[in-house]
Image 1 (tube, rainbow over the protein chains, first blue to last red):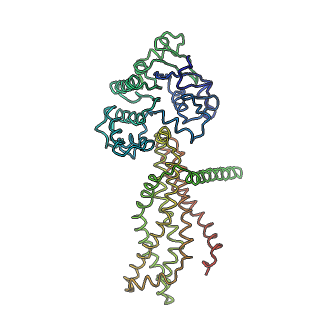
Image 2 (image 1 turned 90 degrees about the horizontal axis):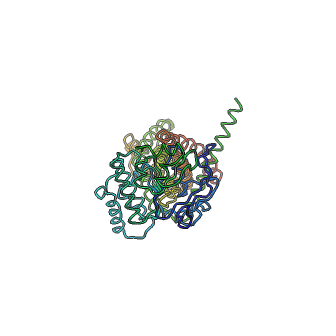
Image 3 (image 1 turned 60 degrees about the horizontal axis):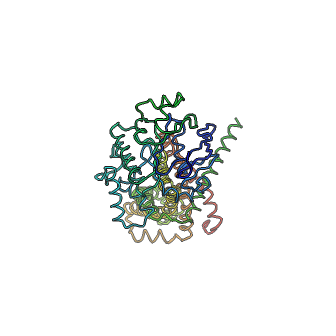
Length: 249
Length: 261
């Protein structure tokens, strides 16, 4: 693993909930501009890993670095500057249901930029247009389908042009066509903006489309790490079985 | 059996301590920038302005009922002229603060518990954090402060609508004029009757805001958890408000002995 261009680094990270150990001594680097896919069955600690990266959870042991800054030593009020460089797409989009779709996307812009209101609205429309939702600006999240909500969540996550995008189960609950659309959007981000993608999924076809580096989690540890081709040839039965699967989400 | 009761009491005290610390954190964070002025105004509208119709109707009805009860007691002694004064003092000192507190804990407490609980279980609170927003300041501090500010204003409004209700009941029976009614009501009232009793409702607001925010902010367990947070918000804030009232009334009587007259 190269550490020279690492944008995110985990060093011997462990995390438990009560007596249940979810991550056990996990270490890895994510290279800048790469698409890093975390694969594994449900409940193996994939989403926990993602939440640790953005400081929503704190590990009991180990250190986590984002852009060379150790976030595990930061106080809660010191985290916002780091978080502004990251976007997070939640599994269920987590749109604010009291705000319209456009207001959801404008929310981070209002909070963290000093742009005039017209510019903020234009920018929010532009972000919604990027995900094909330019006509849904005034709709409420409850009026959108699952796929549209996810795209709106993506637009909000991208509002501040983050250099890192964390994506939790992009294809969960979506039909294969919508899932492929989301994957295309993610790939565009990577190629056009050099955004680093960290994608948690158990949908292998989707992961193959998006990812260029993969890890497989099993019982709180990484049991495989490499390209899709390397994982296809893994000697670990769980990894081989996982990579053979054709659906998910 | 005794062990069980002891464990229950200890758990209750631990919970109360946790809620107390949560409330104190809200007060401490309220003094620390950045200040969430816009969200505070929005909460003042939600908690304060939108409670006005409920408080107005309830105050009016309470005023009518109290006037009828006072008349049935006082006319035995030929003291009907005291009805406006009795009404004004009892509304200002106790009825309006307590009834407003209980009504707000029902409407607002349930609302805050359900709203924050819903946000917690659908990861909207986590989403706020990922957008580099301090969710505690944005959601909790604003609601606690809005409850503390709105409560005395709503209490004053209930006292007023209660007096108007009392006037309507009185004028139907005795044809009392508006001016004479309010002259008699305010002739016996002093600021010491109104100020401490109304200010104590700031504490009621703190209790309602803190308890319901605590339960919503820490909700877990999906839709069922949201329902639990909402119900518990009403139950616990109402009980705590009634218990706190006992202590606050004792404190007011100690600090303002004129109230004993």
